[in-house]
Image 1 (tube, one colour):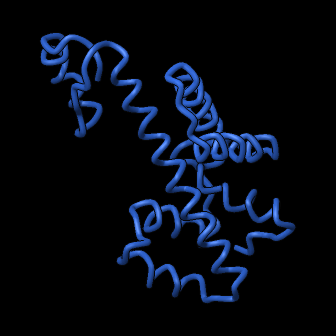
Image 2 (cartoon, one colour):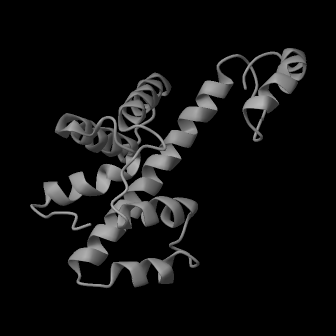
Length: 159
C-alpha cells in the first residue's frame, strides 16, 4: 500500500479483510510500483515453468514424473508446484487473466521507459503474452503461455 503511514494504519483493519500480506511501501504510488515489480517476477517464473515443461515433453520425458523430481529442488517454485500441475491437467482456467497480465506488463514497460531501465525479459514476456491474447487466450490463465510457446515452435502442448 502506498500513501501516508498514519492513513495506512487507519485503513489497515479494512485491508486485512481483503488480504493477509500487507505492507506499507511508502509514498502514494509505491504500492502500485510494488505490484508491478511482482508482475515482473511472475513473468519470469511463468517462462521458467512453461518452457521447462515444453522442453520435458519434447525431450520425451515422463513429464508428470519429471515435475515430481523438480518441484522440491532448486528448479521448483510455488508456480511450478501449482500452475505446473494445472498445465499437466490441461487446466488453463484463470487464476489471473492473460489480458490483465498484458495490461500490467505494459504498465511495467511504461515505468521502465520513464526510469531509463531496459528489462529484456519483461519486454519478451509482454510480447509473448500479447501473442497469447491475439490467439484468443486473453481470458485464459497465465499458464496458457505453454500452448503459445509450443505453437510458435510448430509443436502442440499434448495435454
